[in-house]
Amino acid sequence: MASDIVMNENMANETASAATGASGVGNRDAVIVRTSIIGIIVNVLLAAFKAVIGLLSHSIAIVMDAVNNLSDAMSSIITIIGTKLAGKRPDKKHPMGYGRIEYFTAIIISLIVLYAGMTAFVESVKKILTPETPDYSIVSIIIIVVAVAAKILLGTFVVSNGRKVNSDSLIASGKDALSDSIISAATVVAAIVYINFKLSLEAWLGAIISIFIIKSGVEMIRDTISELLGERVDAELSKQVKDAMNSVEGVQGTYDLVMNNYGPDRYIASAHIEIPADMQARELDHLIREIEKKVYAETGVFIGGISIYAMEHGDEEISNMHVAVLKQVEQHRYIKQIHAFHVDKIGKEIEFDAVVDFDEEHPDEELAALGKEIEALYPGYTVIIFRDVDITD
Image (tube, rainbow, N blue to C red; front, top):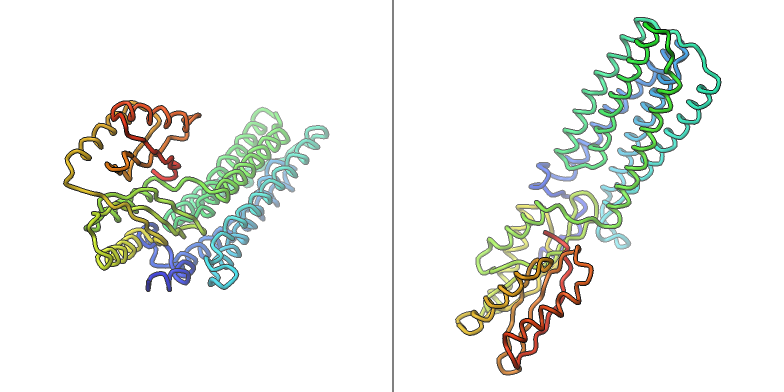
C-alpha cells in the first residue's frame, strides 16, 4: 500500500501534529533548540554571577548553586546535540529513524547532574569539617534574589515550550530550573539568618542542595530507563487512536492495540478490528486505507498492521450466548474485556480473547475457572480462551 512505502521516511521527518500541536519535526526541533539556547545563556550568566558572589562571600552554598547552573547549561547543550542526531533521516541500518537517541542523551544529562550533585556533596562535607566564615553583602543578596526570579521565569518558559512540542527533556529541564529557584531562595534565607544571628548554615545548606541534585539525577536516570524499557502508552493517546479507528464506517470495534515508540511522538501501531463477515476484499482494502489516513491525520500515529475479526450477525442463538458469556465475565474482577467472540455450532466450540489485568497474579487459573463456568452453562461445548496482554487502555 502507498502509505507503507512512505511510512519510514515520514516517521523521521514528521511528528504527531495533532498530538503535539506542532506542524512537523522541523518546527519541533527549532523550538527545542531555541529554548535550549535561551537556557544556556541564562544559566551561564547566573553561574558567573553566583560563582563571583560565592567566592567573594566565602559561601559554599552559593558556589554549589553556581555549579548546578553550569550543569544545567551543559544539559541544554546535550539536549541540542541529541535533538539534531535524533532528527537524522532513516537509513537501511535504522529504517525507523534515530528518534530514540533523545533517550540516550537524557541518560547522559542525568549522569552529569548526578556527578555534579556528588561533587557538591563532597565539597560541602569538607566545609562542614573545616568551616569558613561567610561575608555577605546587601548587593550579593539582591543579586541572588534576582537569580531566583530569573530561574522561575526560565523554568516556566521551558516547561511551557516542552509541553507544546511534547519534549520530555525540555519539561524535565524546566522543572529542574523551578527546583533550582527554591534552592537559591534557601541560600538567601541562610544569608539573612547569618546577618541577623551570626549563625552560619552555609556548609549544611550546601550539603542539602547537593542531595537535591543527586536525587534529581537518580530520578532522571530512572525515568529514562523506564522509557527505554517501554512504558504503557498514554491513555488519552490510545483512546484517540481507537476512537479514530472506530469512527470509520464498517469498523465495529478495535482491540489488541499495540503501539511501539521510536522516539518522542514517533509511534507505529497495530490492531485488530471487528468487521462484518460478509465484507468483500475490495471493501476491506478501502476500509484499511481509510483507517490509516484518519488515524495519522488525527493523532500522528502510523498504523503498520491491521488484523480482522469477522463477526457473524443475525444468529439469535449466538447473540444470546454472547450476552450470557459477558454476564459471566462480569463476575471476574480482573478480566477487563473479551472480544473476538466466535461460536462453532458444528464443532461445538466457544472461542474468544480475554484481556486480564496485570494485578491478577494467576491469570491462567482465572481464565480456566471462567472456561469451566461457561462449559457448565453450555454442556457439550469446549471453551477456548486466548489470553491477551493488557497493553493499552
